[in-house]
Image: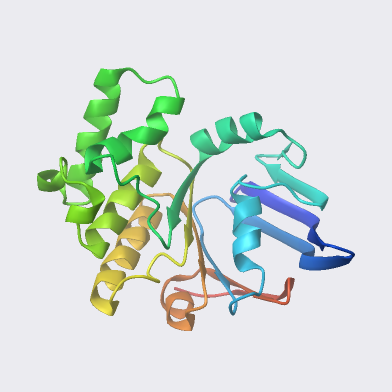
Length: 231
């Protein structure tokens, strides 16, 4: 029986816009099991990225509870959330979110600087990950000197630097051509086969059908259904 890493219980995210309330999420119940490949599928504005931010400890719910390894993280402060996500969760964003003034190697090292790693450990891990994503020859290049696919692979390496259990990817192929996007998705599948828990947020049905063990369909801030698939 696979253990439950993340659980959302009756989660709401409500934004106040003047006198109006906007329900980005309404009563979400979802669990994420260890070493599964879950795809959250929905159109633009469905609430899927908001849900990813909550799963990833980037935000807290207005109502409801979120558990990470059975620990209630729903009302933790930012510094506590930052420590938890630094250890447990790696992020891959559509916009890559690399720091323009840092080299590829320095971008990978950045998350380690908030943990207790020596400079020697940081250097060693960054070089290992550059080799893993086949970009060891680009370690001293800045983001503007890299192609979109290379930037996304650096972002993947950065997401792995603290050896997190869970990799969250928000539209990871959204800014890539189809061939490069396929390379990125195949790499995520490889990480999954090596035991990582992968959660991909996307509007692309083909990604869900090819890679997902489970598909969570979300629309208008509510989960319509969760479908288990055979791979």
